[in-house]
Every structure is written in C-alpha cells, then in structure tokens.
Length: 283
Image 1 (tube, one colour):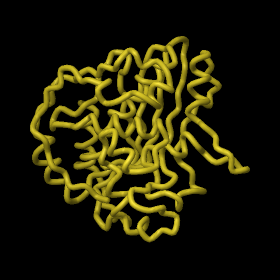
Image 2 (spheres, helix red, strand yellow):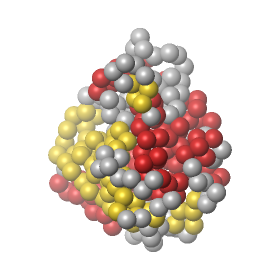
Image 3 (cartoon, one colour):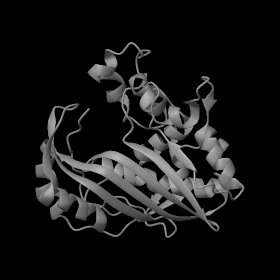
C-alpha cells in the first residue's frame, strides 16, 4: 500500500497534464514507476483504501493464459472488462477485421498462445516457458509478450501490460512485468493483482518457490475526471494491512489452468478495506 499511495501522491504533486487522443480526456501524468511485490511471503497487493474487486482481475488473467479472443469467453469466467473495448470502441467497430459481436481480435492472450511465425504457423510462447521452467531451465529469454506491432490493427486494443519475463534463481522464480500505460485509480490495482497472481501460479505449476514480482510502468496517469476522488477521498484514508491470496494446491499444470480452474480456486484471506470509490472509466 505504501508504494501505491506514494505513486498516487507523486502524480497529484508532480504530474504534467497530457491530452489523450484515444479517450479525448486530459491525464495528469508521470513517467516511470517501479513497484515490487513479495509473492514468497504472500503479501497480496490488494488496495485497502477502497474496496477492490480482485476476482475480475484473476478471471481476466485466466482468459489471457487460455488465449481467449472474445468478450463472451471472458464474461463466462467472471470478467466484464472487455465488453466495452470489444463492442463500444468506434475504431474497432469500423474495422474490417472485426468478426462481429464480442470479438476482440488478436490481442493479449491470443499473441501469448498463438503468435504467428513468418510462415503463418502458431507459436505458443507460454507453453515453451512452462516447459523450460518445469525442467529448471532459464535461458534468459523466458519472455511472454503480447506486444505485436505487426498486428495492432487486428485487435481492439494495444496491450497495456505487455511483457512478462520469468527469472529462475536456484529453486525460486521471479517475475518482471512491463506496462506501457496505466490508469492508476482504476487499472493499477487490477494489474497488481495480475502480476502477483501470475508469478504465484507459474511457480506453483512449474514446481518452484515464488520470489518477488517487479512491476515496471512507463506512463502512469490519473484522468481529469478521477482527480478529485483520488486527491480528496482516497489519499485521505489510512491503509490497512495486506491480505493473503490462497490458491488451490491441486492446480499443478498448465493444462489445469486451461481446463477446470475457476474463481472458486482462489480465496483472499484477511482483506480489510474502506468503502468503494466509483472512478470513471475511459474506453
């Protein structure tokens, strides 16, 4: 919570106003933020100065790991975050590449599970990483990336948190996640939950101890219509202690994550929080 609140205060105090062309809104913006989560000690980075709905974040992560390309698929596992980008984004609605209602195109998990080689055949980045880590291999290139500039026009949204690098030191697995853009009031806690959970899951299914997750953000911003709520409400509240994330120990393989795992396999213990804050969302 301390590093989260420090970043929020830094944006309020030092941020520069930037016009965002996609949303048509102004953002108070800073460049470069580094956050760190102790996954080994299970200090789950769930925001306590407002109620945070962690289940949708984990559901979205599961959809990415499965390579989902439809908002309908995400809704079926408890995540509604792709409805607007799939169905209300004017540029995507006008795209000849959109296949119809709920289609997201080749975004996020599609790239992670079916990146296109030069000959058109799919490359499963995630399966390669899992296979290496299961054998105790770290080739310094255990990188899962969703960022494919050659196919941006084939999807409804460029990835924000776009690349995850796994590093194995002895029997401890670490993660470094890179994010190009972050809506701090709404998106950051969502992303924090996903970074933490991704490392916890990957360590569990590959037979390693989870270490630390490093979360690097390039453009961190607060939209103009969110600023008053952040400055005058959330930053005035005192944080509580971090909760713990409990993951079903029967999840032991990538196949488990692809098939039977649901939100019922995740529980949060000891989550004390303030009242929710209804921050505006920008499509």
